[in-house]
Image 1 (cartoon, helix red, strand yellow):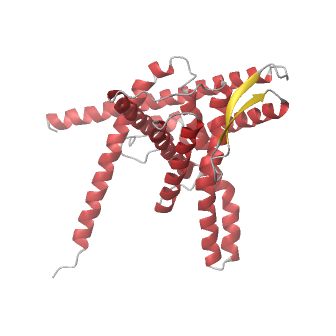
Image 2: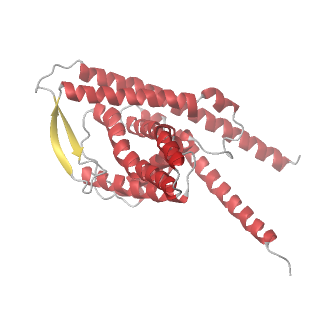
Image 3: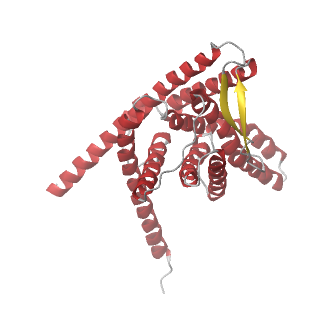
Length: 322
């Protein structure tokens, strides 16, 4: 083995170990965020039911609606609101359990030898989107642009309520429902009652566990959902510079939704929003997230390039000889 090969092997090993460490940081981040989210929620639960403790929240007229208006509303602590917070918190806890059972097992992570070259999962997609968002923020900073950030509502709204409400509205409605209807329409086109029944039975599993693979049809709905998601954020109170950022995040959330289901996209959204409220998160996590996310992004681009070259070579070899 030449010295160049040895250096390359050591570099790949180092990068792989670094990637695993940062993914473990992300797992720790999710656990800490859950504890903080529960603390914020219990703080609300312990408040007296009265009009003395208003929560200012901008209510989106459902991203699934024809017109995504924004209505400023003063929400007061009441039993109905507490029930919705409890529902959102339970949903996020279920998402965390699913994450550890299906996508984020530290034991499986330690065993992975193809963390750079294999299929990318929840954690890698999260870090890639973080890297893209950071690159966009750096570009804006270099251009001297400071995007407007509106006053944020109570942490329980941002960390607990918003991820559940927005993922149901933006991902389930704009991606999940069309994909389900397309699957059912294919069964109807075959005039097969059994296929239709099987398709209906698959709906809960597809919503919870996802469709597994991204295809051209799902890409279209992911882009539509991301555009609506971004536009709603602009109307929510941010300025136009929020659109590209929210669009990038919407693509990542859409990919996770299609691959892993609604609970996973809720968890992705929850982990993202929680960065605002975890003490020192931007200082401790931002740099390693950006570095490793950039590594995954470069590796993904390289893999895509190699795959395209292999496809071209296969086409050349498949051409009939004269």
